[in-house]
Image (cartoon, rainbow over the protein chains, first blue to last red):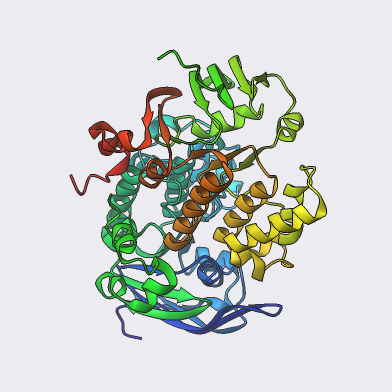
Length: 276
Length: 248
């Protein structure tokens, strides 16, 4: 692993009973880049995410995360909440998991619970109205406002998250993850349920997040998004890596076309271009 | 033309629905004739999913009428609406996570009066459509990947032998290859068995190509209706839903 990598996954395997969801998978994600993980349904993509973010403990293998300052973390040994808090890995979910009864602003405030609790001296100083807590709270609200603005939902800040249409809920999940100021942001199908225009806006949002210094790991089926914004693409099938390369290399890889895009050339090309 | 048009299978007139004080549907007219594939497109939040759910009485219509096969079902309880063999594959894969794949599919079949042999044939057909489900028949629904759950939701709806199949974003979370297989399957079921389909899709391009007719919904109102192929050609539709802007 070179210093340019933020994430190194080595010989990762995950089995559920007799089912081997991920089988001896190795790949790296470059710092400051967008790395996409694609593959057929059931290939093991979300399982990889769940291993990285601590929702699962892998059966075998190593997942190493390195911060820009050189500090490294072996994620398979950390509790999930420490992966979020210390290793600074944030994620979104394929099946949206917002606090649907809370407002948009509240959802973004919950994401900042850890720093706020610290500043409040675990509520004691907060109750006493210590200036440090008030400053932290102001900063948290400011950050929440900033992200509401970035995803274009400021006008709905006080609505319940559950009342948002599907596509907006997806963007709110991204904002919530970004409020934790992650080093690595893992997105599980962020473009699902978005139309072509909305996907385009999402691509721009993700590129701006990359420009802000956050590395991204992306699971996505919308090839117009994947091919446009990914720096590198890793392709999984049946828990095994079948290809790894630039969008151009992946697009022309016969194995990927056969397993994922479909062998009908014309269709595959239309999908890639995301056009009529 | 004076020839009497056949009575539509699903006829929606002046439909209004709301969540609390927020109006979601503001007087929608839409019909689906037997044997037709109709696509409903529109931006997120336009009210497309609400329209589908209002057909089932969740939420109840505040105003207007919904008729199925000539019968007013506006105020019919949801379970009786389902018994008319209107099937829905809901958005967000609402399968039964603790039941096996086979049990989930059987839940769809339980609403029908088909014989055991017919069930078996239906099951065979669904598994042919989604070979992935065949591999996973004894696994619990909740252990499937997201895309596989989507296949299961559609398969379960098909097991109902629907007279009207309502698909809410069937391509959601599916690999390009599978999406194409599903659209091909819908086309085949329509041509071969005359299956009537109402489909909501963000993938407007594929949906309009599949559909005989399409409706465009904006802020709870139908703003445009026409043949699928014709809507595909309209510049305002292309600009709003088909092109991401980068090709413009």
